[in-house]
Length: 314
Image (tube, rainbow, N blue to C red; front, side, top):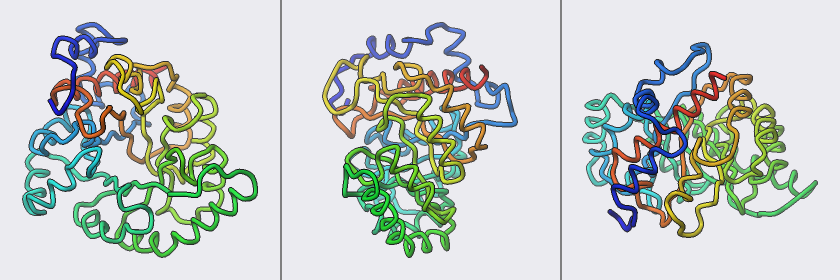
């Protein structure tokens, strides 16, 4: 399907990696409320549509609650095409689908628009009650020291009218710490946390793009505090820039690769993180589902969700 080379038998074998066992698979399919041992703090999961490639929204939306989420994060091309699907079907039809499947729009990811052209997306986000629009910071990249801090400050200043527009729409802007961008390094994230004045501008925190040091990652989360707008449960593993065996590609997912998520989850608990968490990875090539069928994608997400919930319990 969509260029994926993995067959059904291999996909089933993958879903059993790391957390194999019938009991665990059944547990992973339960609602989040049945898994959380500490109801005072729970992750609020959102399902990123790009995990399903360009599958139709009619296929993806029933998977949202099956994956322990109540909200969806809508992606455009090239990673998915669900934003384009909504334009084609019309907003009323999209609203009807959300209602049918008891799903809300939680986030919209618009790297294609960049940070300074988001106003065109605000009416859509506002109509459906999205909490956050995620995008990148753009360049310049690879700065350090005073030059980096000055550039982050200038970026935040330039963002002010866009943040004000987002605030009027009741939406936050989440800047992902994407590689090869201004806001990418640990220091740039620290400067951002220090300088960003508005609760409607924060970081969409992506561990994938940072050193795979769980203690450092946890410390950055604590330093961000209320400036943390969105959390990707996503590790680097073996990367997502070249084709590799599916078993290796899946190591981006929590519980599949080596990164210890417990310190990050402890930090999220400490700052009382109330934003959205997306269990995430990128396939190669972009635009295909991470596994051949929607059911297999959801099962893999549930396996990672179970891993995160076990880390929270510990």
